[in-house]
Image (tube, rainbow, N blue to C red; front, side):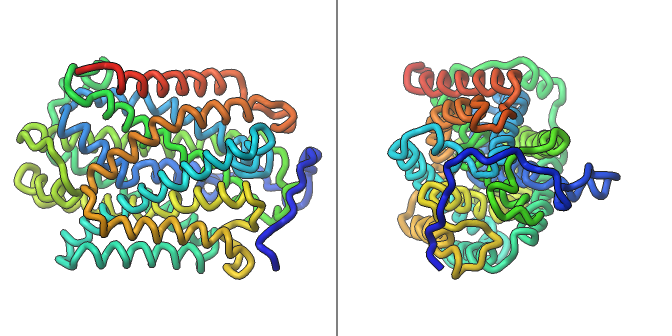
Length: 441
């Protein structure tokens, strides 16, 4: 079978009720089963790139940027909910929806930029995981990079989506490690409360770049594509294999996903808060502000906060990396597949979706190769977040246009409140990027 599939550009009718239409979740256990994409996306938000960025923020600026964990939460909820709604209502991933609104060359450029940024991120994340594994085992980190990359690629290709989604949902619990680490250190809560609820930008060198990096690793382009594509995967898992069968969404389905995303991003932002706090109370106090590797961060925590805190930091890095890398490589593969009309999906056999899996494998393979270029891994993790922070607002403009189109959204456009919040997010991210280049600290 060819990797090319015909894409019907005509507007599909509203989804009809049928035997496969799920009933409203009843009971806590059933409700937990209905959650997933939002929690996974939220947890993937705290990938090693995010962890490195938050560690840099805490080490260099202490608790001064804690307020960003609070401010970015509702912004992230609004953006990811809008992306989820696009996937649920159109029956397509984000790239598939955007191609109905924008010229192909524009989308190809966006997909290429996404692939490059994600691949650099994959490479940096693999190095961060390898440093952590090397610290625990003493085995050379280069071997761990290859092992982790090959293992994640093989697992994604040969396991079914339901298995992957279930594993990713539980890997999200790795974020608890950072909460425990911060409490183990023992903060002064009055200072923490002040810096959380009274936003301020310290007049220090590089602070605006760090703010852009935090925005970019929290409200990140690859998560936009992943969220929408996972809505499609969820519906395929229910038996809705055709776009026609996936069009439209029940109000309670959208509400369930909104709650799912709210929970996922809450835990993600809580982890951000405690990573900044833990590194502020240890590294910043000790004057350790220049960070080279994830291993260095973990080792620096040992004499300052105890071996237990360093171990939790390391385990959390491994868990979130294993969760984030399939998301990074997968989002780029989904975007390419929808633009080129490839057969796609993590439930598809390899021999029926070769191009989709080839894009996935290439992202991880190039990411592995970056480990041998001797790039400062923490700097790579940090600057990929900065790049995402600059690119994200451009993509948000496109998402806003698509989500507001009643025809594309089958009469179910994003509500005005959501559009206002996403519009505000776009303005804030543009302003922060401009300030990074203009403001001299």
